[in-house]
Image 1 (cartoon, rainbow, N blue to C red):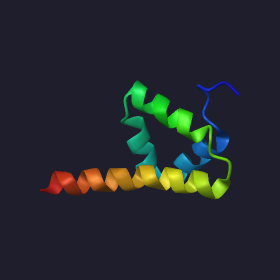
Image 2 (image 1 turned 45 degrees about the vertical axis):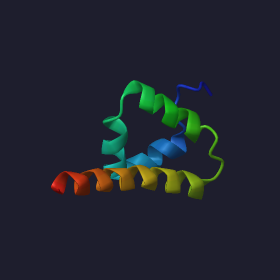
Image 3 (image 1 turned 30 degrees about the vertical axis):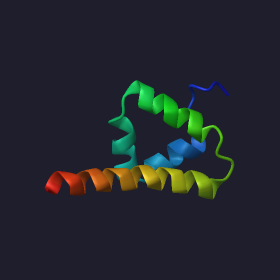
Image 4 (image 1 turned 45 degrees about the horizontal axis):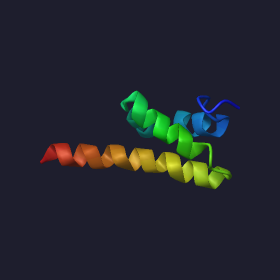
Length: 68
């Protein structure tokens, strides 16, 4: 698998988490490249799900910060 390709488990978890998908899509190419490098080292489903949920949590933190 090419380092530029997204692992299927990442794509599937993004598809199930709209907030994480929005957060990923809003990132710059450089930020996406960092994420891609990280996810290629993830070995389990639960670890991938936690990683994607972390993207979603970033989205929630950004929304709360904008409220102030």
